[in-house]
Length: 280
Image (cartoon, rainbow, N blue to C red; front, side, top):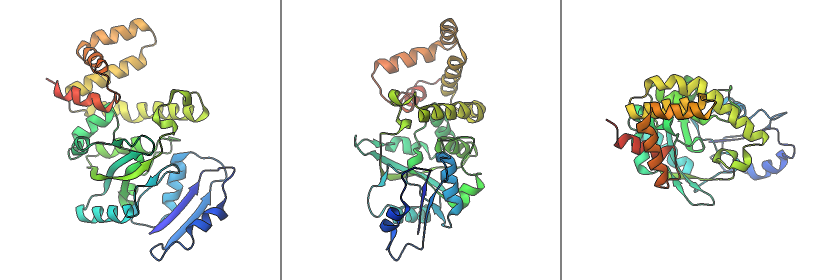
């Protein structure tokens, strides 16, 4: 295997320290690359640079605040790819501090049907980019990560994959211990920061470039109505118009209210099951 360390312009990055960690790296490591961007270019471009510099058949990204769950993760993933013949897969992650494991087996089963998986991922993405693995030839054929984004590499790629009818396989094991302090975890205190604003801009691009066009391919009618309501609420500048949007979709409004009263935390992924179980 090869190990590529790509630092995104950190002012205190020390290549010599990383070099000490990598050498001697072991007989199975054929290539190591240590590179730092001259200036911060964002997660997406940094990932793309690393992938373009790589030569391996498989791509197993590992973010700076994550670590593999155990020492055999890489070899077990390679075996899974070879055994199934899949081109892209996702796995479970475990919160480094909370211990919470996601996604569950029920969600993983959804991935067997790209149409159902697309519906669910549009309602609320459950495929973690931190545990998204693929063959290099698939990544290239799919056009790679979208550099219109700065921080959000995974969600657009997942939507693009499912829209193409490609199955994302599910490896039902924890592969990473996931750092839970990042801005993508929804901490309100991090929204009004430079990184938080970058992520908000990425979601605006995501909405216009991927989510709106994908709405036409939603197969579940209640999921479609839910997504149409969300879009109407985003586009309604005044409270009166927001109320009017709820009047247009009363069944979804009631479902949302009941869902919140039940005290669910995962407001996106969890509500998919309520939408599916009550569809007509």
